[in-house]
Length: 445
Image (cartoon, rainbow, N blue to C red):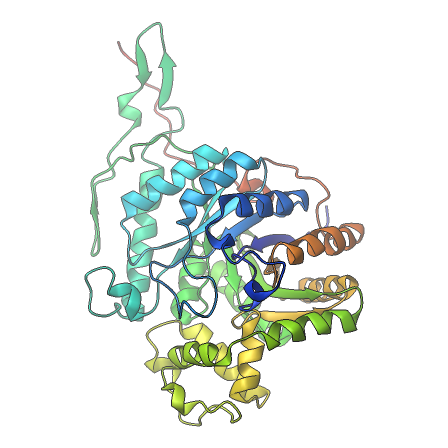
């Protein structure tokens, strides 16, 4: 079979455009509606998407006046979605900075069991001092330290997921032995950041390990992705930048002895779709006109580490912004925003409009055929293994993508027409990780 796209649906309340909640048809309280998210997941499953994905942060993000604020804890939400779907993968974000390995290993293994092998974990290190202050810290740990902790965190999680052999539970009713104790062993991990005895209090899950996703594009982020990630969500504005990132990450992966085909790179795309180009442009303009620029400037100033007063709406960004090396937060997103503004000579007002739809992800406005063309071009030009689809308005943007763009991609042989497997690893063409070598000793009464 020829190479095919992988598509993930990134779901966010009423849509990714920050003003989507202000449209007459939008439910401004959808961010806490389980039924809303179940319906979106069923829609994505009808379109044969590989997976759905929820971002998350252990902090109230931004000004609550700007857009629907607050989100359900995503692994809890995924269990409700698992009951309403049967095939689509279920990916949630969880922080290695403000959790412990045992808790998260258990939580994602539980989602994998509940869903029959459809769980994925987007591993993040959580930038920003606001989150730190929710966890008894005055400020965020340094960037390099967060990534060092993340690497050890993942190593502990792998050990915990493998602390049960696949054949540990034998359920021998005649002998009265449910599981063989020797096939369930402590991990006795002792490292710089964690000391974990183990074993996990849950048998090995259907996928062995939930799918590991990563979304940071800094040097440390790419290093973590090359070593551990099986899918990477990234933000790239131009084909050249996407190709450079793709080549770099695939080469890093190969240098660590991994098959580059086992890491799927999925740039974000915000498709604004109309039956004509003019209709799509009208929708984009309508959304942009609903942005509250004073709120957006506050968020931009926080990202750039400057005072809002230093960002006059009708002037370009100041020349003396901090260097990336001075940024301890989201380094790659900072660089993307500054590069976009400088490359296109955008005023602050224009930059706010460009970021309103996808916070730095590529926005594409056009017909369904043009969106499919854009996806195919990046896919075939060595810039992507697929896309993280970010509808600007939900549910309508996802409905249009499923009903109009997916059939075009299918007709071109670029995307599946039916699921061929049952697990998330099946969808991404990834093998189930082998566990500990089974022991052959017999159970004793």
